[in-house]
Length: 476
View 1: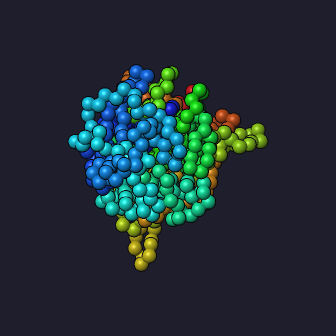
View 2 (view 1 turned 90 degrees about the vertical axis):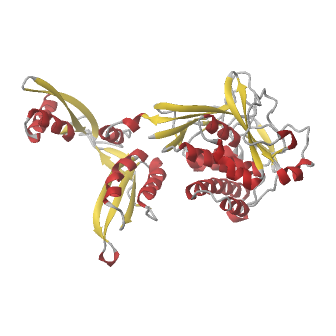
View 3 (view 1 turned 90 degrees about the horizontal axis):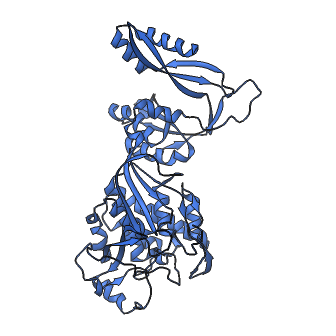
């Protein structure tokens, strides 16, 4: 599985995410539709943060948009920030941080252009949706970008007590925020990850002045977005009295990323650092992106199944005789009447990669007596949205339902490798051992593939190899 991992130790903003994705290998040419539609330019530069080479991205207004805003721009204002995009009345960052201006995306003279941040029209939610739909993006990219804006819109509506359709964005509806969100969506698609994760995101500290008053960090919009996200918030780091996680950065990651405690094991193919506007003495103000193959991608089907079978929930209670273990799950279902055998045959692997614990396909009769299939998927509740999305993508189903089951009772499971001697040669066979919460074994089952391989090599029957392996495990 191709994994894209964000490391959010010093928060994230829209422009930081853009810089990290570009530094990790995304193609900047995919940003052209946004530049054309908004009359803007992504100025891509390099900088150093506490000796870490990082990429910066500034959105600059060009053409008529630049001329319209140029007279209103405050040349003395300090506009370099971590992407403050929720109507701040103050600035908090510094663009004079040793940029090496040796490359840009586009051929415009940036000295004649206005920074898009805080400039351009402030749009309603519906106006933003119309603008994105007019960009002529690929359907998946358009859907993802609109989903991010919906998260932002719902957060704004919840904070201000309004309806989504009535929500009027402040700086989030300006050109730079639209460029950040659509740009990040385009760059993520260019990297083609199968899964995106992030470590806990640091919020910073202190307070920020917004158009509606002074608020502590994290701001209300970030809190609302985090409630919908799979990842965790983390205060600080200690000694940081500024905002590190912006609503735009939070919304992008809330839509795309699953939360993890630490960066998972992976074989790296690329990495990059996106720089924010702050300069801290003891830590780099960057967000890091790692791209590579998760270790499970090269694992065998058995190894993936073992990971799915790993029991992490302790028994709820028992009476001293031992019990099975309660495991919280979500059951997803969909009915299919047009899926090909090839698609159905591949669902187990593709859904397991997305987080499914078990996949069953049951023949059934559907309307007009047509043959069809019921697909039932078990997964952890935290994985249900991702698994449902993958199920829809793989099958084309128009809906996935969640059934009423909330948990299952399962055995404690472990694997033991036994060695069989056949005609002077040694062969290993893995055996699954099932036990209750007291450790009492009640079933052993040899792995069929191992037994079949030994049988083929020795000329013995598969059944005889299975019996010998299970007997060896029970006697060990």
